[in-house]
Image (cartoon, rainbow, N blue to C red):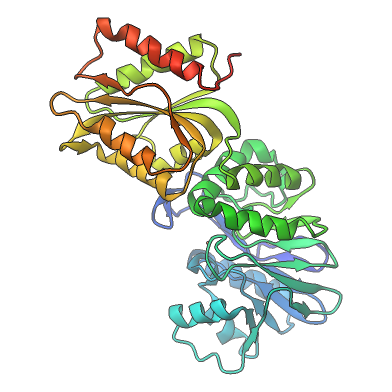
Length: 404
Ligand code: FEO
C-alpha cells in the first residue's frame, strides 16, 4: 500500500524510510534510521525530483504509481547522483521509457559511470540558472558543486517557493509519521542527527556550502525539501540556515569543552574524568566526555564542530598513537575543521609518543591554538602531578572559556 504525503496540492512526497540499515555509507551508525526523499510534481507536465535508495524501492514505486494516478512521468530531475538517491534511475526508465532525464554535464558523466545505459535522446542537459517549465510550476537549477558531490544542484520552484536542496539541510532519522519540521519538535527530534549528518557528510566543504547558501539567500524560500529528513518550513528554516552558517565557517556553536579520551586500562580515562569534574566545578558548561573506543567517531566529530575547546587524551600504542584516537583526529583534519583551542594529555609507560603525534596532527590543521603544555602522564596520574593538572585546567579557563 502506498504511503505518500502531500507537500502542496500538486507536490507529493513519494520516498521511504529505512529503519533496518545499520551503517549509512557503510560507516555511520544509524540509531533512528534514515529517509530517502523523492518528490513528484503533478502539473501539465509531471516531474520526479530524484529517486531513492534500493532499500525502499518497492514503496517508492508504489508511491509514484499512486501519485501519478495513471498519468505518464515526463521528467526525472537528478539533483544528486549518489546511489542512495540515484539507485532507481534504470527502473524508472524501464517503467516510463519516454521519460527525459534532467541534469548537468557532470550528472550525465556519473550516470554513465554508474550505469551501462544507452541514454539516447533522453537527456536534457541544463546549465546554471536554466529553467524547466512544467505548467504552473517552473524549476530553476542552481548548481551547488561539492555539497557534497561535484554534480549536485538545487532546484528552486518559483510558484511555491520550494527549494529542492539535495543533501543540504538533510538529517539522519526515519520519519515518525511526521514529514514537516513543525509537525514534531525539530530541535529535540532531529538537531543532534542533523549536526552529525552535516559535519560528517558535508563538513569538509564549508566554502562550497557558503557559496550555495549565498545563492539560496536571493530566493524567496517557503519550504526546503531535502533528500533526507523532514521538509523544513516556518521557523526551522532560519534556525537551520543559522546552524549551517556556523558549521560551514567552522565557527563553534557555543563555548564548551569536548574531552575525547582513549584508555586501555582506565588510567588515561581517570585523568579525563578528573579533568571534566574540575572544569565543571570551575563553572564551565557544557563539558562532554567521550571514550573514542566506545563512541563512534562521527558523534565526537559532531561535538567537535559544536564546541569551542577540545581536549584529547591518549596513550601511546605500538610506538604511535592509539588507533581509535588517530582515526578521530585524522578525520577532524580531513574535514578541515579549524578555529578551536585544544589541549593534550599524553600517556605512556615507556617511550611515550602520543603527545608528539597529537601535536603534529593539530599542527597540520588551520587555526588550532594549543592551550598550555602537553600534560604527560607516565602510566598513572600521581598525587604530585595534581598541581600540573590544576595548571592545565587554569590554562583552559584562561583560553576564552566562559564561567557560568
Ligand atoms: Fe544522500 Fe550524498 O547522498
